[in-house]
Length: 235
Image (cartoon, rainbow, N blue to C red; front, side):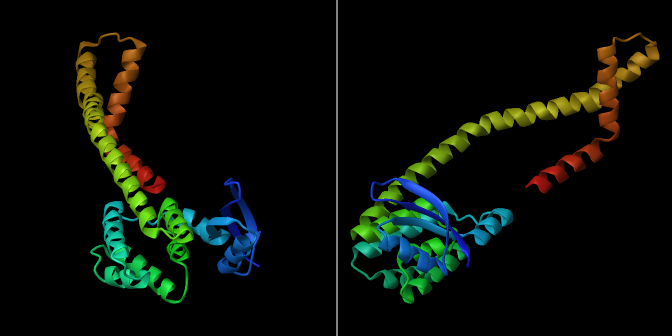
């Protein structure tokens, strides 16, 4: 019997996480709901491990925000959820998001809860799935989507401010790094030739710096290839 990683809240609102066995995700959700628990997420352990090994599939959050704004407008217009998904799924400009919304639509068409359909795609933010679940439980889906939209707008604004504030330090780091590389690979070896022609007795620290500079200039391409390969390998 497969094992699932389960995250749920009890009657007092405390969050718990445990591993449970069940025949299927739906069976486990139904079992926990009958016991009075609010289920946030259910993930099969093998799928969860492969997700971390294979890397997360990220959505474009700005386009996802636009989708939710359109979704909220249709919901508040009184259209059924399935009709809203039908209208939006074929009109999304982001192919990746469109593929997952179509999958959600197909799940809902077969009778799956909207929150379960979003959760099974494994790409939507957990806070969004939880918001949809809370909207279903309370009967105020539009209100919770609106709250998520407000949260997402604030999150994107903070992220943009952080990125803009990091541009100047990043430029400085790149320039300083380039200057150091230029000094070590070009200036220091030229001074080494000068000192060698003068037959001057140099301090040990200067000799070490000259050796590093000479080595770096000789093997700079190899060093660059190793660094790039290491970054790509870690990535």
